[in-house]
Image (cartoon, rainbow, N blue to C red):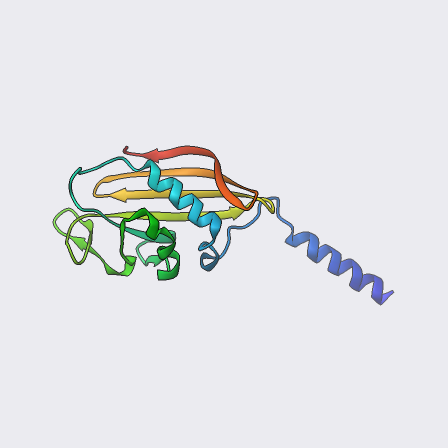
Length: 165
């Protein structure tokens, strides 16, 4: 009888852990092929703001709040070297007065902040993601659906959910 109670309580415990929605990954797992594909897509959607002015880009993972942000690792950032863009570590960004522009600390020019806000597997080969960018007072956020086919992760759906541009 005791074994039955134990087995029943274990089954009920496992059932209580079940969720209809898969939880997002821990931030340290955002630095994967799916995260890279989402950010590459995001970069292609950024409008040409301030043409002719040098730009810097910084990748952050998860939420950005008063407590700060989580910068992407140098190894993950190096995956974007083929784009020939200047990437800087988010920890070296500065808040420049008077309008609180987020800037490259070396050049003091406004920097693009690229955010991989959410990365959530929905199956073994699909992902839901939320990405965004900001530059001065301009910004946009998007929801993406990614799919892995033949070893390549691609965006199969993209929807802008808010933004100034």
